[in-house]
Length: 125
Image 1 (tube, rainbow, N blue to C red):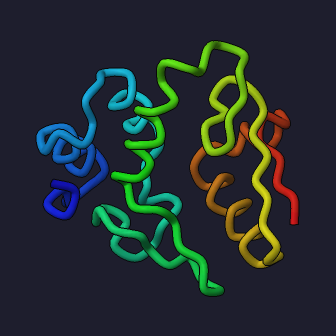
Image 2 (cartoon, one colour):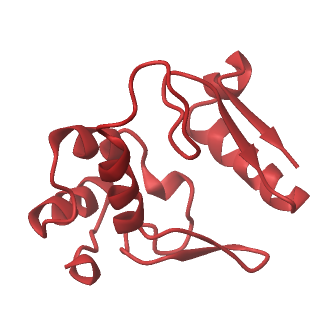
């Protein structure tokens, strides 16, 4: 049950998503453990619910990311590209609010600045 999957930290959140049957594969669990939600969502990052990132925009609930990754896992192969996945390829973040583009840039720089420096992640406003 997604609404019972909150965690006290990133690993606890992912562990609860797994134990509640939201995450059903090792590959999805591994992918979700690679990115700490707390570096992208400031308020209640480890709650399994959408969180406001400002300007009337939300970051999806973790269970939605898990569901998306589960649906994609059998279709994505190395070198493929998908919106919101992009690991190992090129990811382009697009937003119509310049402030959210800048917020994304700051979040990525705080987590993995090499992604922006190398061009693996590009942000467009």
